Length: 448
Image (cartoon, rainbow, N blue to C red; front, top):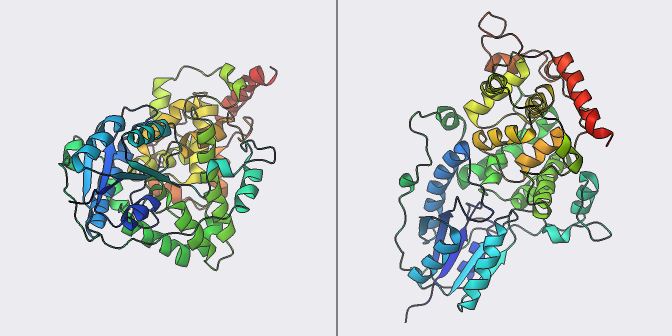
């Protein structure tokens, strides 16, 4: 009698190294089948934006090859996971299902599936996901979730991060593989028009490229991390999309950077801590992308978006060079330097008085590293509506930011070649006047 295979359900964890659920499945000594479900409509699901879909396509191609090298087929299915996972369990005759945990609202799906599959007689095991510590394990002295980053970071640093797991051995026994969707039929890649030329030029998705970038950053770039606020300098990790899709885990990054002999290791790990902070925040505040975490901002007098101004912001045609350079970098490469992101976001929320959720949705659609925790978390930080946010009256002046962090104009020149000519537009707003308007708007809720 053939052994019942183990089904490993992959989500935003497209790797074979340091994958607890995969490692556990292989350790059972039975055939293994991998499953990826493109669920865009399930309870708590936020479907990926256009740039993220491009990355997902190519990451799945690489992941399929990596699994095949271990003797594990990857089955692709599109539909709601509550229906698809039990279907594939039945088709494979699986006796066990494993997955790494999610910390987003979609974890409700996982809880329901774990219960129903166990009631059907299957073994179901979940394992730590894309965090350094489980949200339940990092709490204040009174047992409540942290709302302020610095004490959270101190608590996280006191938590022992589990060791990274290696790549499992190849599976000897082969399972019968059910039908799989054709990835090309999912339409994840843009065609008419094909706007992904910049993404192809800048990025190579996949676990192998992710591990190579982590090694390169730790060995060659980390010593320059002190210049990370300079957008013209290659001093950042460029790991954010790798982490977003789980091509490399935060545990792998943590241990690799801690082992690097660099004065900037602690500074980078603190940034990794911010990523962790937003994941824990999302776990406890599942409406992070939709609701102000500070209720006072529910009464903020946002203005109805002026479509011309909003379009100018999106296209990098505001006449404010640092904002425009960042928005053009975003459109071309799918990322934007973090220092510039703060200025571009502040300009939309405070100089244009447009609700932060409008900007968050645009970034969700155009960032290859947009995830459900960091994207809204960072927007609420800039807007002042988050739990541990920059105060609303901290309004970034993009001209001063450019003078300080791009003093020779190299970043601006790269993304705005027409700067200084008649082809570049005049500013759509006056920075001083709109700053005063923003502060006056804030006063209407600060007195409440």
